[in-house]
Image (tube, rainbow, N blue to C red; front, side, top):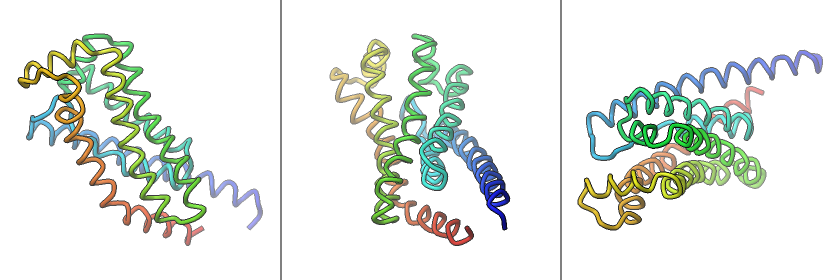
Length: 207
């Protein structure tokens, strides 16, 4: 096979892979919203999309992770504008522009950082690189979200805290609003990391 054919095949495989992962991200995000409707304990639904984002970031690089994070973010913005995500709708009403910026930034950054971390650490050990990237994704996603809420949407945070009988806004944001979401996202990423490793190894063998 010539180098040109190899390049074309590689680009085609990347496009197909990203298309499949994009579809998975969209389905999982709407599934997250559906679960949130069944268990309405928190203003924001739990994110189940970070694993396919990590898979894409590991297989195709940080730019692919950023793209998949962007797909996730667009769905979050759509759900916020439409009111499907009640918490997101409140943030949208408070400041539409900053709502879009915050939603896009946290998802894109989570995928991009996961890709960078995997690339740097997988050179030494694929398993370690995958686990670390899977941990970084929810840390970055939640971290940027919490920081953005405190910087730009503190009145909204205070309203949510009051509704939940909490006087300490910081405690509410870290341990109640985002705490449960973050822990579930982190644990699910860690638990599913071995599956990610198997997927990556299988793709590498085919290549």
